[in-house]
Figure 1 (cartoon, rainbow over the protein chains, first blue to last red):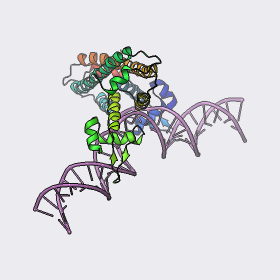
Figure 2: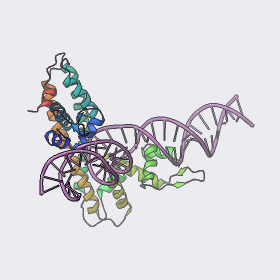
Figure 3: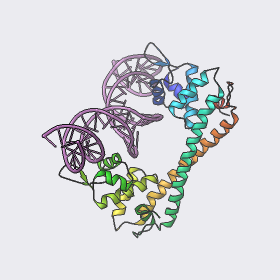
Figure 4: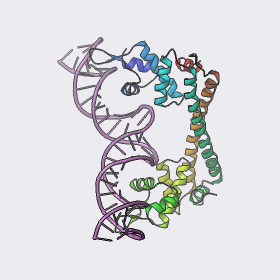
Amino acid sequence: MNIGEVSKKAGLPAKTIRYYEDIGLIKPARDTNGYRAFSGADVHKLAFLGRARALGFTIEDCRNLLALWEDQGRASGDVRAIAKEHLAEIETKIANLQGMRDTLANLVSACAGDDRPDCPILNDLQSPR
Amino acid sequence: MNIGEVSKKAGLPAKTIRYYEDIGLIKPARDTNGYRAFSGADVHKLAFLGRARALGFTIEDCRNLLALWEDQGRASGDVRAIAKEHLAEIETKIANLQGMRDTLANLVSACAGDDRPDCPILNDLQSPR
DNA sequence: CTTGACCTTCCAGCAACAGGAACCCCTAAG
DNA sequence: CTTAGGGGTTCCTGTTGCTGGAAGGTCAAG
């Protein structure tokens, strides 16, 4: 299978797939013409990676998850630990963003948004209350 | 005022302040010895930038907000437009993260997390349900 | 034989800095 | 006078996860 077809099947841009090979996440074979020759297992791995990335796992997390996935003797506790840690980071991010959102929403609703220069948003950035 | 003192007053790392000069957000004067000589206005601007960044505005947004802040004849509508746009982006991010969080929380709670290899998290990454 | 759709590698760039090297400046103490 | 320290300066590299583009090889069809 060439990269274009794999790209469609796995739902990842060809650029991304090349990148993943670059950093050692996958190791597709090569045809005599130099083209990458992907196996079904490669496609499967790429789809796995795509889903892990969609859940926000970092590349390094993905590398570890992939290794655990391929290790039949893994302990599910190892997987869970990675996911739990990641979950905590996401919750932190959400909390931060919610704080920003609340402040911003207040400011936006306090601002007339007309032609006059008076602006609560700038006032707050100048010296928050 | 030297950069160290400004760093404390504005609550920004010296590195960041140099960077902000680099990209043209501030233009501090220079002493004869080559040191940056910050004015009170510079400090004020940096604090403004720090707060805008803390609300998640991009550097380009900050550049625009700063210009509006300094423009006595601005229209508050322009400020509000920037803030509103940014608010929408934040809400999008929050929604995405919440989606990830929900999925992850489910998976984490479904996973025994012990020594056995069976793992709902990996199962889902392999083929989501 | 040429066109066009593939594929290849390599290089640059994004955001917003952080780390570190190599060096200059200034003051105070021994 | 020298030295130690704690400032400051520039410049280069690295971070994360790709994306865009240039320059060129390959392949099947018309």
